[in-house]
Each structure stands twice: as structure tokens, then as C-alpha cells.
Length: 90
Image (tube, rainbow, N blue to C red; front, top):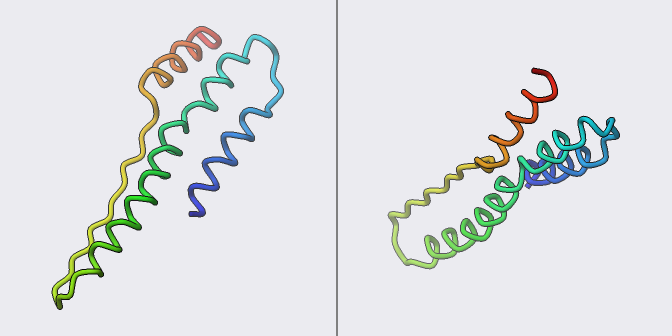
């Protein structure tokens, strides 16, 4: 859960950054990069609890529990951020 907390805190910290108006769009886009990650992590937690319950509710000596997570950034936000960085620094 610590990584989940870090992503939320990072998002909030980015949103609190004061920059000139010229850079505000880039900051707003940067703070949105974690949108998918936070949602995916929340889904992972609930899915993991269910998998653990299902795995250990079966009376057997041979249990396999496979937990994995893929964290992504929103493609449209990444593309917009790349364009904004190019605009500001290009």
C-alpha cells in the first residue's frame, strides 16, 4: 500500500506546484499521469483480496496464487504532455 500512497502524494504535490502561467498546462498534464496508476492499483487490491480468498477457500494441498499488476499512464495525457513540453522548450 505504500506505493499507492506515494502515487497519491506525488499527484497532490505536483498539483500544488506554483509556476508561471506558461507552464500551467504542463503541470496539469503531469499531475494526470498517475490517473491510471491509482485506478489500476485500487482494482488490483480488491482483485488480490478476492484471489487470496478463492485460493485458500479450496481444501487442497496444492494451491497456486498468482498476483501481478500492470501500471500505465494515460496515452492521451502522455501525448499531450509531450506536445506541451515541445511547445514550451522547443
